[in-house]
Length: 424
Image (cartoon, rainbow, N blue to C red; front, top):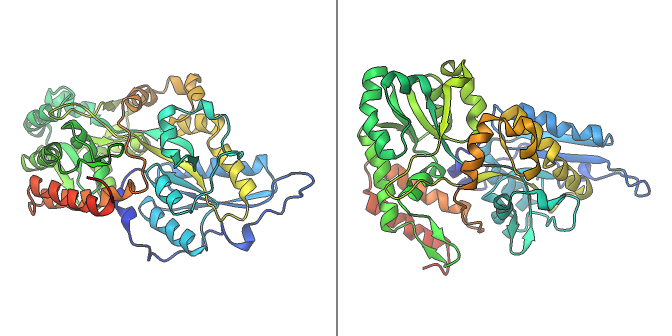
């Protein structure tokens, strides 16, 4: 679940449940060095959402069939807690997992802190040429590889076909078209046009990109979040909510958005492939064909959606590195990626998997793969994940009327200059 980026900015005072033993004495390999057979424990932290985790648990535990002397300890860690929890464990050298499902923006941050094992020359990097080029970018930091790509994603416009048909409304290609159709949707069906995620700055990016803006230019080391384009983006979300075209929530946006879409309270929502199975569980989508997915609407300048996804990283302090490398290889293999797509409609990071009929013919893959190909790559820098917290604060201030769009953009820029030394 992509959902809830800003929660990863929690200070590292979260109490750790004694669920993982990655750096502890009990997790070490007991392999017979003569036979080369893997053994011992591999603790795996999985950050997938409620609709995904049963599948990921089964896939992870399948590693034991290939390596009978290895015990996979599967631990489901809520996405919003995982970043701070891992830093707590790794920084304290106690309780960190051997392998973790890391959001793409976390890799450079964790690697910069020295918490991840370099994977170059290890078993984890298997058939590297098979990975999508854009998926590899987030796995590298300062010339080394610290993760293997597991899934790749971006955002799309989820819409209720029945509601739009009843309202006599076409799928909007721009946010202005969406706003223009909101009154008709409300009058004809009682539904609000859009659920706008006001609690998660990742979902602000289509508005920012749509106005021609960005957070930073990491190549030029230039801060862009206080440019006029960002002011326009803050203004765009405020206008959608104030006009009644969109409803928002500053608390549990992921679950509230999911429920609103599933119950037919909203006609549309911006979301990603991780929510497909969750949405289809709702009463509005008992007929799965009622769920439509279209490109994210364009803003005043263009349409733009961020590249997201998940990688697999190995803890530098793991007491069972050999088995951990093999586990990362297994979980990112073409075989496992194919099964993940078949069960969850998530997008593979291996080019070969897209040639498999069950993947090639998956309707959500057919939509999201071209969208991923056009997605905007975020800056893969150590501070990349930290850039979202100032955006979350300023989004809330704009949506509640405590700040103007110009004030919000300026305040975000000020915070970025504190985070990014040397940026202008």
